[in-house]
Length: 195
Image 1 (cartoon, rainbow, N blue to C red):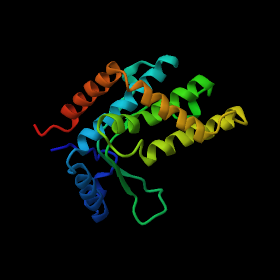
Image 2 (cartoon, rainbow, N blue to C red):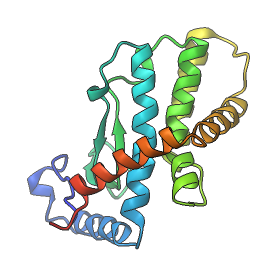
Image 3 (cartoon, rainbow, N blue to C red):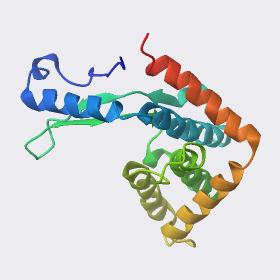
Image 4 (cartoon, one colour):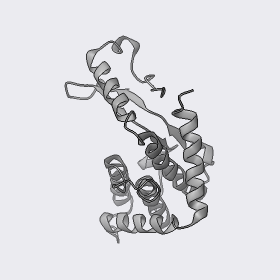
C-alpha cells in the first residue's frame, strides 16, 4: 500500500468529511494501472534536470528531492474546501524569487519543469508532455524573470517549445533514458511498493 503523507493536515482536521473525500480521490488516482510507474518516471525526469540546474547554482543534488503522495491543508483558501492533494512532486531548495534569471538559468529551469512530462511521454508513452502544475510552475519562474530583467527576448511559449524539444532530443540518449529508469525504479520501490 502506498504511504500517503498527511503531516500537513492538522490532526483535528483529519476526521473532516472533505479530508476523507480528498484521501479517497488520491487513492483512486494511485490505483489506476500503470499510474505509479508513470508518476515515478515523471518525477525522475524532473529530478535529473533540476539537479543539473543545481550544478549551475552550486546546490548539492540531494537538496532536490522526491515528495510522495500528499494531502494538503490551507485554511486561507477562500473556497468551501481547504484540502487538496498531489500524487507526487519534486522539492526544490528555492522558490522563484531566489534566482538570478540569466538566459542559461531560464533555459535550465524550463527544461527541468518540462522534463517530467517529456520523460513520461517518451518512456511510458503517456499522451501528455507535462501536467498543468508543470506549466504553472514554469509560468511563475518566467513572470519572475520578467520582473527581474524587464522585457524578455524570448516568449514563454517559445521557451517552452524549445525546452520540450531539447529534452526530447536528450532522451534519445540511452544513458539519459537509463538514468531516468534507474531513478524511477528506486522511487517506485521506495515509495510505492506493496511490501
